[in-house]
Amino acid sequence: MSPRVVAWLAWSMWALSVTLTALSLLLLVLTLSHPDVDIFDYPVESTLIAASCSTVGALIASRRPENPVGWIFCALGLAAGIRHFAAEYAIYALFAVPGSLPFGEALAWITSWIRVPYFSLFVYIALVFPNGRLPTGRWRWVTWLTAIVVVVGTILVAFSRGATRGLGPIDNPLGIEGAPGLVRVVESLVFVLGILAGASLFARLRNATPVERQQIKWFAYAITVTGSGAILTYSVGEVVGISWVRIIGYVFVMVGLVGIPTSVGIAIFKYRLYNIDRIVNRTLVYASLTALLLAVYFAAIVLLQRIFVLLTGEKSTLAVVASTLVIAGLFTPLRRRIQSFIDRRFYRRKYDTRKTLEAFSAQLRNETDLEALSEDLVGAVRETMQPAHVSLWLRPETAPKKGLRTDQP
Image (tube, rainbow, N blue to C red; front, side):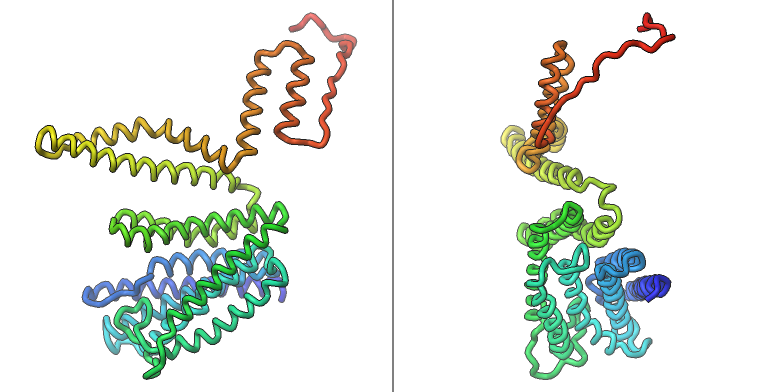
């Protein structure tokens, strides 16, 4: 296809995804006017994925049409838009205002099975990112197995009985009586395939070029943020029963859902403009610092409250004030210690390089012997850059040019 046709196709998929998302939000607003009706469980997630994935996909596909990553993102954004629209349409047509819109059951049926190919697209992204090719030919069986799971799983889910995921009380309209419920089995298979696809990134790292390594770091960073948020929301938050833990985890998930396509776009187009190692470093530092300070804060509140109860017989707001002051005093020293620990543990080479340069800077300020200074300079270059050979050439002093004054400072 010509570049013009390619761009038209990519942006047409984007326009369709955005239009379906806008109609979905309109139906959601209309449904909210009926407070007794259950709404779709994933409106925010679907909106973010449809908008971000279709936009990034259109940009990549129109500029790098030979890379299938862009087309997969276009399909992913379109699938998210279709799923969201079908769900909101079915809820409005069947429950909010029954009979107001036709084909409500048909849209509910589409919602029941479209999530199988929808989630499988994430598997293909992990398999072919960033250059659009598999790491090696050995991973071809994963692509074929994923295709089989998508086709067979979609058919099985489309005719399985049971409630439609995300639509509350709506059952699958075409569920066959007596057919086994295989929805969880199919979803588990897709999840296992996703783990295999994630392992392909590690296999790709072994033979990756420096450019590909930098690109994979962006993608892995976004996946880590999303996975951390999911663990906080659906595992830690549910176990400990603390609402703010689930809220923080949910925010991480939302940021990650937008961050995955954004990181892919940066990795393919602008990876040299941003230092991903610095971003990862700061994330490790401030995530660890936040978790530690929160633990100290709540531990201090509990301890001080018990002390006040023992002394005065009642609780006091001074415990909160004192805990806040403790956190304020610990912030800077803890940040420095955590930063030093992470630099030594995960960025040892850069840490040693920085220390060497700091020592050389101090020596440079105090050294007056040119020969000793030359040896220090060669040693600093050798330790930081580790070249095969180091030599220092000093330009000999030349006579001043004729006509120039030599008595100027």
